[in-house]
Length: 187
Image 1 (spheres, rainbow, N blue to C red):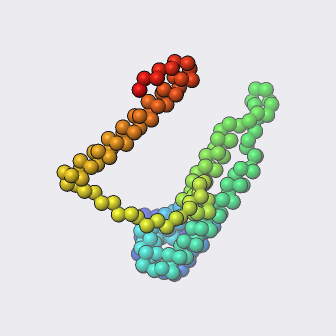
Image 2: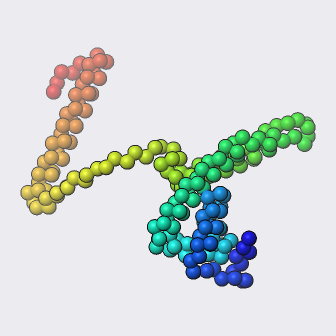
Image 3: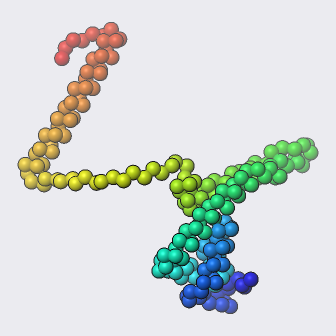
């Protein structure tokens, strides 16, 4: 196992080695650690790692698969955290009775929420709270007439919509007054 990176004792590598890449991806897939922490462990600068995957499509696919697996690993952790009730109850020092431990319960909640957020980022199609539906849309061309005539037409259209809205509001108000018995047939 490689020694941990220490800024005073070793330098970060910029040279690609398949051995480093494999180890980083394997550890990433089987832990909840950040890529930066794992890269430091193996003496690789995170920006170097990102350059490796930017330059090689096969490496990028391998990295994406590792991130997908990491999301599944973290999802399993959520279940373990939720099921672990070992610190949910504490003994009151005065009465010697068991009572809930709000600190532990809140901490578990925080750990679960942080992991839910993380897996939604790592694998949004699989773990996002709201399902993302991709619909191919052809953008319509919007042509704006910036001439004086075009501006005047836009103003008239805006006024016509505003006028129609005002008339409908007045209609609703008259209907409400009629229901209350305050009949005012004036238009």
